[in-house]
Amino acid sequence: MNSEWASWLTRWSDAGLIDGATADRIRAFEQERAGQRRLRWPILVALAFGALMVGGGVLLFVAAHWDALSPAQRFAIVLLMVGAFHAGGVASVDRFPAMSTTLHAIGSVALGAGIALSGQIFHLDEHWPGGIMLWALGTGLAWWLLRDTPQMVLFAVLAPAWLGAEWIAATGDSPHDAAERVLATGALLQALTYFTAAGSGRAGEVRRALVWIGGLALPPIAIAAAFAASSDWHRGAAPSPISLAIGTAVSLAVPLAVAYGLRRTAAWSNAAAAGWVLALFWMAGLSTAIPLYGWWAVGAVGLVAWGLRDGRTERINMGAAVFAATVFAFYFSEVMDKLGRSASLIGLGLLFLAGGWALERLRRRLVDQARGAA
Image (cartoon, rainbow, N blue to C red; front, top):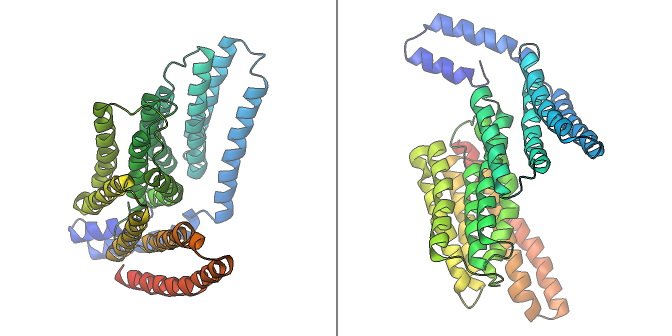
């Protein structure tokens, strides 16, 4: 039974499948053995660093001897590199499940290297996003077979990366700013979908992993989206209206479909976020950038309200960070250069001291409120 056994036990008891005495015995048994099954953090750290070191060492070894190998030997090493780790995962699944999960994860990472090396061996470089697609399909198949969280993480990262690579390949090396905004729309909405995967109540392991992926990806993607919305470079040829319509539809439909699969009817909040993103890039055509700062502040407040509704403190913290970054960006871009040197420094200091103090007090109050509602 997994870490959510208590909820399943309650569900079975409510359905009348087991009586109260049996439920109590199962609960006592699982709680007694919980400490024995749980891995301590040094073991988890050792497994993580061991996976990185083994994977890196294998790749360095192959790279060092690559030129001295024939094409047949190269391809044999690629197959061995991918298959050996998965075979080790199968062999250790009963004795050490965590090691099995780690080895399967290394095998899926090695699959990407194997696809790239196979393309180099056979000179298959006509359409490079196809390699990412094959890698994503491999990790998706591994997730379907193994139900391991690392496989899901790889698939959750690679599938959007493949769609983005297809769009980059279709628009060329010097894309028009409209093409960049389509890419930023899809990336921002997908990161937001992952970040809000957990609803009210305790989230499972898969949803927690998605929240981490979204939380790590959201800040750099948001910064890239801010630059895409505030610039009008027209560096390359504009995509055709049909291509632009298809790209926009995919960048909206895929994140919303994933959100609906995760949150069902609660995905209306993700649809509202999609409207916010569309309005953000519509404002890019305005003659002044000041409304963009206000719109980012509205988005930050909306993210905080979203966190209050579902009792998710990470959304409140992220919304507070976005609001603070928006205020500082507005000060540096629109206010600081209009003041003298001393006045601008004094204003910046007051902004850090008074604004930071007030924002932190409000953030703590909202976090306490969200924890009380969870």
